[in-house]
Length: 276
Length: 276
Image (cartoon, rainbow over all chains, first blue to last red; front, side, top):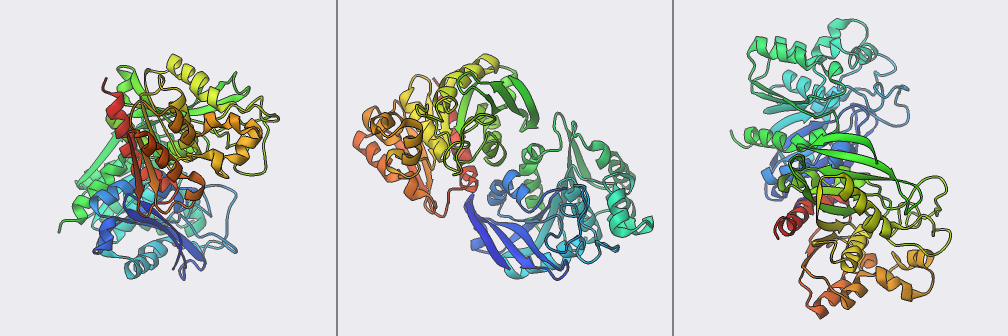
């Protein structure tokens, strides 16, 4: 992997890398924050998956996570939200194709060859980061909106890979939402049986999670009807799943919401990653 | 003035307004953060002036100031860096014209009618903000790069308007820098006598400042030769001006540098604004 930029930030380094992705078949870009503690010893890692239209850059520049990561001694990784570049299929809509990978492995043309974001994150990028950077296998995952969806499905399906789990305003029931049905039809086909592995509410009902979960939601979120937090809340309560779901007065879906609670999420993960 | 956007952030409101500027002759946009305390009573105000190419948006989204402003109960205002729009003169270079007002009152065509950023900030926007928003006359000023220059010259020339003063990697000696000579020639003309009112090093030598000053600088700042901190340091030491100038290992000129020390600057201003 090739270092593109390095900026000192809160005593650590905010880096951006590109690498050749075998899974996606194109070069992929991601950002990683290494806190000062990582110069002495490997540190636990928190994954942050971004939402629709984002790249690795949005949360890196607007989320304000680095201060808290430095305080607690966690590394952060910010993957891209889709493959990009020559030969990568796209759609005119902002919510399909480039910037909108939805963290699935596409099975349908024209998305099939490149849109493999699930395997890319959980397998290829995880292996690369663990091989090349000073991080341990104590890892947590979070994300915003489409990235909150990604965080939930990846954790629920891979409980051995993730110690801790949270999300900001996640899409939790894409099989029943216009943020989901359109994309799953395109990427996975019309047979809805293939969708359930990518629906956090379905997964919560079927398998649950080995730990507790933190989910923050803005009460004034302009997209709340597409997120469907009520479906996940119902599944959580049916299962008696340990979970904190907070609805915050006045907050919308923006990075002003994410940054307002970034410190709480990093602290949540640190508490679970830094103890055995 | 017209509210364009409002986002809840750390319990307060991050707002963006436009208003008709008589001084600049066009509509101007600015951002203001009102902390939760401002719902109960007027609060002190910290001005943040941005650098070359920036708008009101950069520091608002990337600086991470809101958390600290909410912690301390300060309002923040982020003005634009120049007039914009139909009829406003511009130059192909990034460092002249739109996005590069240098916080001066232009006396030369074609800049004369609109590029009046000094009076815009110190007079018109100050009056508007104090008239329309819940802020007190306890005010401090800071800024980054070209905005650090703006903060220093505005404070040094208006000691009765500002209680507290700091800057991030400021341009401190524009009369002797390619970030300054080009712009002052264009905006103010070739007679360098007209430049001294806009040179922080000259002002420090001539009038000093009634309080102490905090200046942070990155040791790896790629633009340090254009900033000339050594000139300001010499003037400060000649005058025995109370001042803290910190040079930070590894840090560059980016917002990763600004955000890393945003908390220190807000605390510095709060300590001086919240006590008599």
